[in-house]
Length: 625
Image (cartoon, rainbow, N blue to C red; front, side):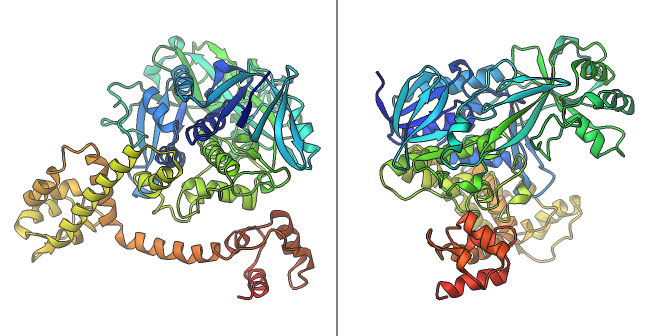
């Protein structure tokens, strides 16, 4: 009845969509199996992409040739570059998207890929033969066969929804959960555990008094996620800021006795960095208010998302408390907040390619690996799709280093350290964050994407033109002098010491108070030189990157040196067949952890929690180093 495929992707969320697109565009025949074809890449939680460190991931996905950035650019209703007041390593793009258009655009793009096929069904079992995954069985009773399988089931595996004392099965509100697959995977020796996440109430915007809230507009000059010429945002919707109060907290506390979290009905661990409102009140009892961000769901929708008010308390408590918040006095609630528990598979059971160590040809990506967030899921899906394709063709897996991408940090953290709570990416997790900026994701990754056959050749043409402009501008500033008479009035205006003799433009730009735009205003030669590139499609991003390269040259060089030293450790391979329990010179803790993780190289071994420098020395002696 069914054809054979190269890749079967189980689940049509953000991870599944990127996996299917990547594998198919590289040349594999892909079947995307999802429980509801109308919900492809659905934004189950807030209607936004990007944010702190997450925005960098979306730009990396785009630089490699993925689709998340393009879809976001086509469907966003607001764009903001966060952390502009800090250094460029912290700048993070974030966009509010139209929830419905986002899903529609993703499906449209997937349907334009000839190698992507679709099937609406539930996968209940993995079919195996001689220790290899060869297909799946579905709820309809069918069998589908493929050379590789990618599981991207999100929160649907044995999902249970909690609202107060009520709980019921579901993958998200309004959708059934998926059963059978976890139990089947356990039979292969794959371990599973439970996590919890939550979502807040949705409110009818016609009943919100926005005049009592603080308006948050988008950037005056909105940016984009994609490095391609995606549409520029011409008009934007506003978000709004309001606060809880002691009165609101007191009302919420009346429901604590009925809270599934406090009563112990929820066994899974929740997200540390995105806690429910009741958890925030309990953990931060000294605070008399908490921020709430009110986010529009789309151009034509009256629905608003109350970011920061995630809750699993009884509906009546949620509603009563919400109406005591400024602007929500007459609010009509469209959906209650709820918590959801679901199965995940500790990612230390994976190789860096995201292939299972227990069952060959089986890959895992997204929330089933213990992460939270569309961006983290999409990044894993992209990598799983790439590696499933490479696996079929007998090629080496594609693995990004921690010094190459936030995606590399994400996967290394998951595989090396694992997680017992929903993992969320932050800039602080990346030790090379000055190298891993959002503006240079294309410089870091686009050539890799082109080599894989995933990124379009036009991306490389744009990148090369961008790099030429950066090089020319940096070179001009390194050799051209600024005249004191021209530049001192500007330096005085930004409270920077005047120069007494001519000085290189690059040296002046090193000052914290000085900007490239400011220098251009007072140095006409610089202005004329830079404006010579103004007709280029990559002009703005190239000039921004050139300024960063000049201003942070010393820091960038130091990080590169450290990255190269660590890279040498990554090149010292450890065999899969090393029996660490026989190493008497290692502590029992080190032996057990090394035996469980089976690190692929010395660098990975050194990052395992509990492994000491002396343990690494023992391994180096064993390897004859």
